[in-house]
Image 1 (cartoon, rainbow, N blue to C red):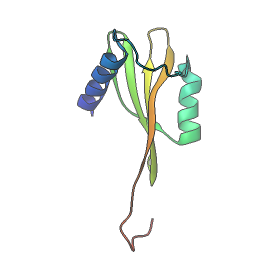
Image 2 (cartoon, helix red, strand yellow):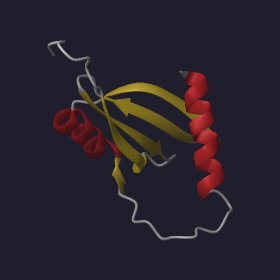
Image 3 (tube, rainbow, N blue to C red):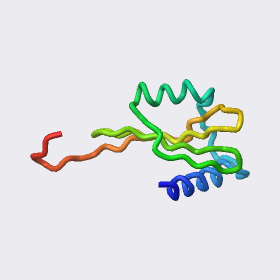
Image 4 (cartoon, rainbow, N blue to C red):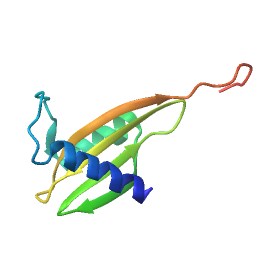
Length: 99
């Protein structure tokens, strides 16, 4: 899992590093505590992996169940955090299998 976080962090650093953005996307940032509270209370997510690179930490949050949600959170040195990416993964059950 740490290898996955490292690769995600490298991708984020490449995409958001010194390269000019081709499109402007509004990023939600703020103190980490309320953002984490929203992830845990609203979406049922928990921290599954994190990696620190050059003073910045990338955290992967995920929920369980049939409709899994996931979030990549960037935590900065000052304790603030920004949502980098979010998504869902729907699990399709085989026919005749009860959830």
